[in-house]
Image (cartoon, rainbow, N blue to C red; front, side, top):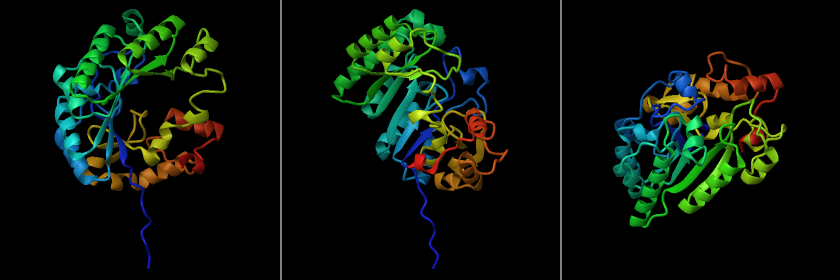
Length: 316
């Protein structure tokens, strides 16, 4: 008797809620690439219902990550549907400039688990250098309003995070320390991230490392350590799905997607499609496939150049 090999079905997925954005961030690949390969659009409530119906094993959904989730006109319905289905929602990452009081209350009422707000700087002058068109004070006001709704509902949710990307526009120690102070006053967890800009070198790396915990030494970058090929591993355990149902290779590659629609075939069928299986093997050093979304990706090209692919024990 032959038994079908048991397939891993992820309980957590990334589902693109909206690729539209109200800001024009200085180095945004989506705005520079005219929405790249993902296109301009947003997740519809009926597609979300269909997705949950077809994939009952999904219990956690990260609404991410190529636009501003709060521009989705179906967002209130999506929050309500998830709450009634017992599905946890995480919003990572948002600019939080434009959000109605109705949605602010719904975030708390429907127990959105996590809200990560991207604020690179601690003043309008610094913040707006990268987040072009953004209003620092408006973001702070929205966080304060959200805190009031949390008090009203006596809720710990959502957990609020402040993501601060350290780059050339905002790497003064004064600005970093000011952001930490504001975050503490707001009851927000602040964390710092390294920029993907390859030519960036902090003006005072030792002080910045002490203030943020980030290591900017040459032997610690996005290709090494705990962050080594992190996006590439999504294809095994944390799949990303575009707002129109197309399966993404990862959270970062907005140019090329799989020719597979999760909304139509279901997540299991999509994840074990022959091309997805071939792509996984390719990322581990196997045969290369030009039709794979990863074939032209910068991270994969570096894997090939260095002959340094994902190893089996890194996927555990």
